[in-house]
Structures are given as C-alpha cells and as structure tokens.
Length: 374
Image 1 (cartoon, rainbow, N blue to C red):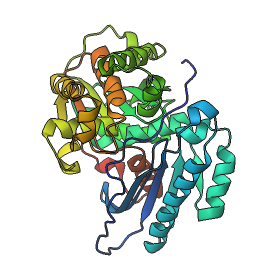
Image 2 (tube, one colour):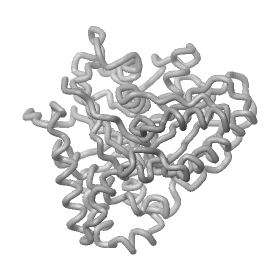
Image 3 (cartoon, one colour):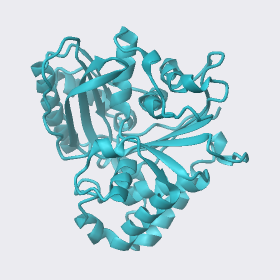
Image 4 (cartoon, rainbow, N blue to C red):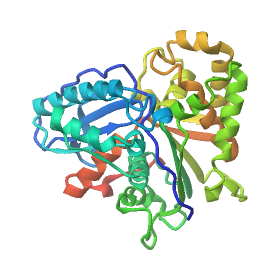
C-alpha cells in the first residue's frame, strides 16, 4: 500500500458553543473524549448504556488552531491562546462531572506544526489536560468505528468518508465474507487495527488521508474571484489527489450492496439544508439517507446564492458559510467518482469513536449488542 499522507482535522462546529447539557445522575462511570482539530475544539462526556452511550455534556468551539499554519509551518500565538481558553472550559466541565476516564487527542494541525510539542507543554502547564497527538491511521479507525451502527446489513462494500478541516479520510471496507447480521459489529472490531483481518471479518481494502480539507482546500483557491470557477477548480484538484487510493479505478458495477457513509460538518450541513432546517436537529440528520440528486440540488442552490447569500442563509450558519463550498466540492467529487445513488449521513465522528473504543476496552459497552440498518 502506498505511503499515507497526514490525516485531517475535525468537522464544522454545530454552534459557536454547544449548550451545557446536564442529565440526571445515574450509576456508572463517565467517559470523556476531546477532539482538537484544525478548526474546532470539541468534547463529549458520556455514560455507557447497553451497546450505546448516553451523552451527559458536550462542548464545541471554533478556535481556528490551524490559521496561518500553511504559510508558517507553526501554530500562531493567537491560535494557541484561543485553544487554551477553550481547553480551560473543557477542564472545568471534566472537574464538575468528576470524569476520570478520558482520551483527549489532537489531530492534523498539531501533527503538522513544528511547534506542536511546545504547544502540548503549554496546554499541560495552563490546563493540566493530557492532550496527545494521534497518527493518521488511528484517526481514520476512530471515524470508521463511530459509524458502525449505521452500516446496513445489506452492505458488502463500504466507503467511509470523513471531510475534515485539514484533510479528508477515505476508508474502503470489504464486508462480503461477513454474515449480514454481523456487519456492524465487524466494523467495530476494526478498532484493533486495519491490518490482519479476522477470518470472516471486515477487510480494509485501502485507506488514504488526502491532505485537503475544507480549510486547506479553500485556502489554496482563495485568490480565485469567480465563485463557480473556484468551485470547479476545487473539485478538479481534489479528484487529482485520489490517484493513490486503489478503489479510485474500481471498474466493477456499483449496486445497492455498496454503501457510502459521510461523517463531517459538510455532510450534515448539506443534509440540514435538504431538509430545510433553520435550527439544526441531530435526530433528523443522523442516519438520514440522501440521493445524489438531492445532494446536487443543495449544492446548486449554494452556488446560486453566491458568497453573500450563503453568509445570510440560516441553514448554513455563520460558522460554516466560508467553508461550505470547499466541503461541497469534495462531497460532490466523491459522489461522482463512485456513481452511487445514495449517501448515509452520520452526525458522529472522532469523539464518538474515542468513546466507543474506551468503553469497549473497559468492558462496559458490548459491541455484540450493535444492530445495523436493515
């Protein structure tokens, strides 16, 4: 398999700061997962509940940690200060809930920055939080296992797509040898690694981390003034970067046994726009199936609005309007390259994957309780 490129950052934040949500006290340990990416600092605190988990508290704030990184190769002082401030809020939440089991990870921006080790020392000094940098493969694995509950029992070939701020992860999984009822659980077992598949288990055909996400792709073409021309260039450039991904040249007929699951703020924003939601509702978006025609209609609508119209559109939101077209260019390219008629929408990702992995490892959440989509 070809060498992998650095993996990406997180998705768009749903709100400037997610509301403080407190659930009634129940028995059982609390777990925390924090994702520090190129654009946002996001955290979930949850309690295991059967084969799933119950979210007790959440936090999301745009910190633009990667701002200026392309030009300087370093994290800027203002970006680090914004991030530390957000992490101090996270620390207070962890203290309030007395969370002792946690995994706090940094991704693309910290992997690439020359001063990331100094930044981690700064985080430890200012907040006491044990933030660690994870590699590209682990980030891809965590995104994949978070989507396990959305895998259909009919699926024989699965493509999981995570459009981040700094890069886009693609993982192609062969499930033909897995019993239909076992397919979601087989995906969960990939938490142990992409190599050496079990007999009768899920097999990772290939995976890649393309070094283009919503922020990095936008930055590369920000000097192009024509809105539609810029969109076309972003789409073309992204497709060029897929050459090292072996399924790119897939010649077999793609039918209803092929499933694409998209997990990112781009995907959920397009889904919310399709539904006409003026206020985001995760329960209506997560697990939604969209046709390629519906996706194309939303993207054409975005283009017809232009930059000013997108900025004012409540379906897109103030935090996402500047990045939505670069994400849409990636999404539309992927739907064109693999001509499938449907995309499964996942409002889940790295944080959920971190929680699943911790809970399964501790034996407090059983992957055998997963049921896939019929």
